[in-house]
Length: 325
Image (tube, rainbow, N blue to C red; front, side):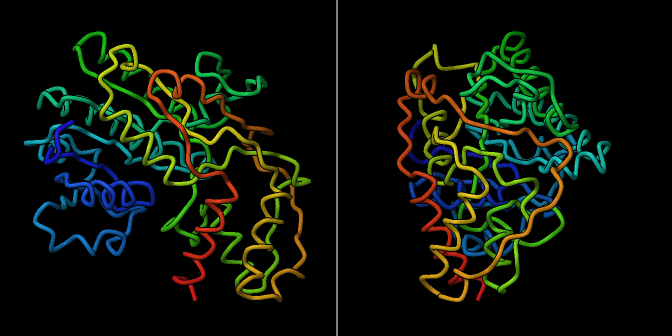
């Protein structure tokens, strides 16, 4: 991938997308950002507005014409735009389907017609569904447990069909509980780490769903950026037209997570160490445990995650302390 190539980041004003835009611009690439600001925020990308290598298109992936406009002159696509959150999909499966499936097809068609060199898309660990196998290996999945999980699995099926039928180069990255700077702590569907950080900083008790022994493979944003760059730049033909777990490869319980958050935040505010945690019912659609095998990504892409959960959490806590106070 040549420096100076033009890369479209859909959902580029969101948490993951804005971090990708920032990194790509720093590395000398031209970036087109497509976002409708449904969940993304202008302030996530406002520092790039005067950068001649950055172009913002306000549009919706549910509109094919917006997708076609966004891919004009583009070499590569990083498709991050989606409606996340299992609870949101359970409450409103129609909109989740429209964005995550119809919008995904629109982007594939637009990228195909524009002869984009490679299409990298955000897949999800939710695809593993009710499979109890640990660690999660890419070829062993179960039945989806939520409308959101259905949409992300359908994305993989469509990408596979488009690669076989139209000769597109597609790579899916199954993200595992990504966290880090600029992840939104507000709103009904805020992810657990920024939400808990915000509550603890306000001296409020976080509520853990269940007994706190559910576990996740929490993945720091810089590991995700690394995976996207490897997927963009690989010349290994065997590495194309497949999916990869994008994770650190380590399991952390929610109880352990809260313990770490209290420890790191108490460096800034000692009173946080004494805040008690509350427990509520298990959440509908949640899987008990998630742990990724990253052997396939290591073997075919040369992936070597640099940040453990704890290392990433320390950096994230510092960012939130500096930006939420």
